[in-house]
Image 1 (cartoon, rainbow, N blue to C red):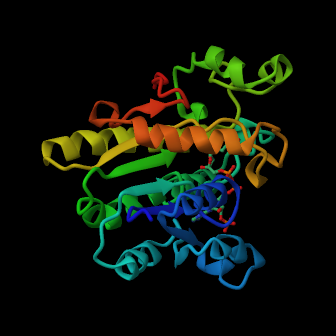
Image 2 (tube, rainbow, N blue to C red; image 1 turned 60 degrees about the vertical axis):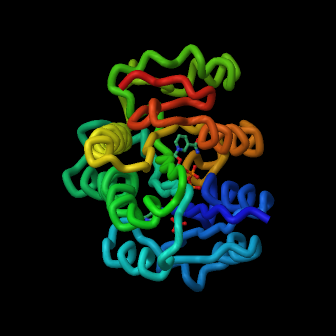
Image 3 (tube, rainbow, N blue to C red; image 1 turned 120 degrees about the vertical axis):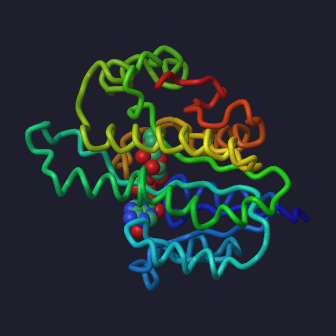
Length: 259
Ligand SMILES: NC(=O)c1ccc[n+]([C@@H]2O[C@H](COP(=O)([O-])OP(=O)(O)OC[C@H]3O[C@@H](n4cnc5c(N)ncnc54)[C@H](OP(=O)(O)O)[C@@H]3O)[C@@H](O)[C@H]2O)c1
């Protein structure tokens, strides 16, 4: 029986649910979060069935994050995985990216979703992470957040040639303005935190990953790669990373993707 603790934020479907199931199979003490709006929704039963402890976190509401950290209690948190995010909406031309839309994406994807949400979760859960022996934070980001791009070749190994040709893998295609900007912000937040935490002599390691292309609601179930394989790879990355990787954007081979 493992005594290690993992928290997956965004646990009711997609990558998050698969990670909850995988860590539960390894007998970790798993905590998963759902949004308060999903409290009575049927998707809550999937993470609950694994025996995971359920907390309520909405990236758009810091109070839910503060409360969740309080409810988690005074115990070490070995791994925090920020998964929650919203879809890219690539069909929308750049002219239609309104201020409110960009801000909403920023909140869900960065401050409160990918750039802000994860930041607030890291802030409120840091004291629990620092209680663990080797605490690690994996922020699920995307190659789309790389401004320079240029990492498309390694993705060939995971994609058919056709998918490679038609899916905008890196930033030579443009598209997905709000999504790319929010993911780039998450990458920046993670790097900046890693530097500040080093100065503060903290143990916590924070890094971002490009998780691959999976059939989830976010991709309208379009991609057909194998979730099991990707989840195993994500868990291997968490095992492998060291303080030398803190702040980096990594792929599933723990190779750095250029910012
Ligand atoms: N699937 C891919 O191929 C792919 C590729 C690259 C990167 N990613 C990244 O992987 C992450 C997960 O994607 P997925 O494919 O698993 O998507 P998904 O199946 O659509 O799941 C998204 C999760 O995020 C949660 N979420 C949305 N808004 C939230 C908020 N305001 N606060 C807290 N949680 C929120 C959702 O909860 P609700 O059910 O309440 O909406 C859901 O649990 C995203 O960050 C995405 O950018 C995915």
